[in-house]
Image (cartoon, rainbow, N blue to C red):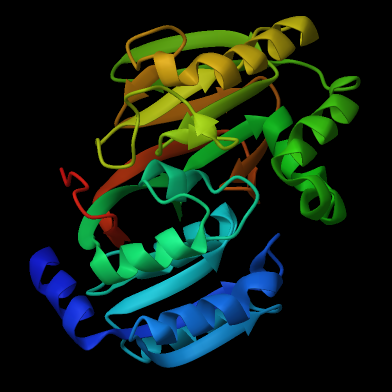
Length: 307
């Protein structure tokens, strides 16, 4: 396994890459050709290039088998999470093309949803390693949602996401909320226990959710998971707390209520509740969530701190 500095130097010098774009993501089909051309103009030797509308994991595996130094993945958080899971503990870096609806993980590591910036990051950036979360036995890059948020991810229409972007989620949530019952959730961590009633719970590895900061000091390289409910048992509390999170997340810290920052936790609910992992359905509660520290190498912007 090369050091991160050695891998960075090899990427800058050799420019050996493979490209996988999820053409089903919100902007994937539109931007595949553009990303392909930009990478070639930047001097990358594309060992393989795939615009995927079928089996994403199969295409990612084909790209990995080509042995590039850099695997460039384009799509939303689900695509990035899948690529991150498959690249864990490999001598290969993940390059991010944020083409999804919210692009939470890319925002967490400082890459805005802009192709020019993303490609510049790959040509001028550096390799760092970040943590992966593990929900049950499923590694993930960004977050786990339990309850209403998972129902929203399962039910948000693809056409609506393509048409209005991240607004598709609150629109879908408002439709589901009228019939959603609150959960009694129990979180056990570090020998303690917290119980609360809420419509939804999040456990984040990264620093963004729904395209906005969770707190000012949460990120994907801090050896911490951040668990928090959104509101209480009433729909009014849920709406008020959702709005508060969106407006004030950049000013809040992990030490404030209702955040619980730990390395591992057990979460159960009074009835089996739907779970989504980075926007993809992933079973039901109860669930153990843990960390795999420094499991994933990514190409980050120049000057990024690496812990």
